[in-house]
Image (cartoon, rainbow, N blue to C red; front, side, top):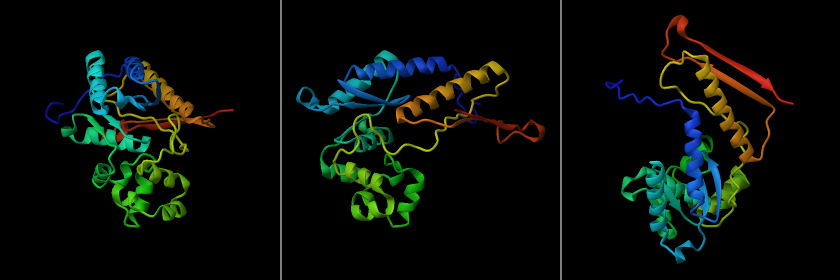
Length: 251
């Protein structure tokens, strides 16, 4: 384990759930309105907060509070739209010199950041659309920013146009609104060590099912079936290999 720098993590999912709730509750104390986006992501509305305290100072206060109360570190991104805020958060984690906080309201600085980031890092785009964009020479978020919005709408649809407008500082997604709802939700993990107890497997499946259901509710969606799949390590040899799945239709 030490030779290959392998890290082993606890499968205490109840603890993770508790930490997630405390994480969100702490953040919610910093803003009058907020939205839990995922187990470890939260959007907060900080409109006019800079009249009381500088946004960057406020971000550092949030980070220090989480570190002090929960021993958790996080990236803080602040901008005029949710899509820009997500990119700011990405930058806060990508470059250590930011100190974990990135605030961007100046268009020149925004364009500079966009030129350093791939389109696949833009919220709502992802790998497949990024590959389609690259066929048109749109490689970086800066390329996307400088693209003709009429072309983007015609070729990729209205949601990509909304993303383009968000990068230009025009809010298109409300606090509790996100890009288009996904057609499937997958929650899966690789375990740090072999599972030999059925109880631990039940615990893991229950936890992942709860996470998928949480995301389903956030999307305001419903599902027709649940699929549970499991497989052994790809490095297992011969008869030690195992793979199976179960599908449960819902009515």
